[in-house]
Image (cartoon, rainbow, N blue to C red; front, side, top):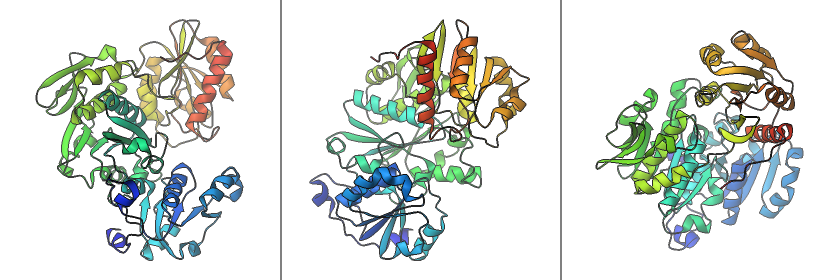
Length: 484
């Protein structure tokens, strides 16, 4: 890929021409670009390229009928669109391919592109090449969105013009050239998946974080080692002028400390650290040129010890970028969490309802169950998956009062946990919430934490979480809580 990139000469205007006196990371794409994937990140890449006068072909293997809602936007963008099965003829005159993260790098079209010497880069890489602001890159298996949001809040408390972007919402290509991303003291806090990191070339965050590493996406990676190597690409281009933050309590993360050129910072719930954040006497502490107390664990408003880890990670970024401990503490105290991540929904007859629809694997489910000391009525299930349910049986038996299973995995959950807990089945979210409400007692937690992906019943976990919330309000007759 590096050799191929050398074959691409500059066609975009120089950084000074594009963004005035704000230097970018030297975009070096030339000629006609193919954007592969017409979802959010692909459209953002196409918009950025067309705004810079670069001709674009937009390709997606889904049929054209699924993109009728984009017709006006595509006409306005003046891009050539190819939907359905695209053959190698679309590569004619193409000088670079911009890849959306959902498409495997082993796709035959991409193999042909590489064989023809056409570089393949991610939307993340494209956005980086146009960025004039330093980047904080956040990756890991779990906790990325919460940590990204909290880092942004902490940096804003420290008077940075911080913007959350990436997988958290707006694609990087949609953000990098906005006025907010070009202000003095601007910082882009980017949530990044392993898929996006597979096709970076120059991407170099000022601060990179790997929060944790547990088995995930092993349908895409042939081994855990392969998955870890994809994550490690986040620090690939870092130098001694940059910082790399890792979870010292995660053995897989801790082992990566020697594999970076960046300055290493760590965070830990279980031990003091030389440089970073840790917990001591139930207080969040920072250590660099000495120890500094930030706040007590009891002052963290979002539940669960995994969220303590997220706070430690975010506080470490604050430490690196010079945010004062009292500013970090204020941002954490005022933080109300992220939608669909252990999100408080309502209270009815003494039972509290929580939406954790982002729980799409058993690791997330385990963390949700460990977040509460009160009895839990769990709503779980979703798209069928090959997983070892037995690892959670003791916790299911210990923490749950009732398990209500829905989705494709109803029978699998009955087989795994039917004898460990009071078990019920539901054919819909409405039925699941209705049963939970009928069985809930004062002091219970009614928790949607599916532990599975949503695609058997919903388009995504956000749609699933919204449906749970709307049904919960309807069944209980309550209304959404006003935010501060």
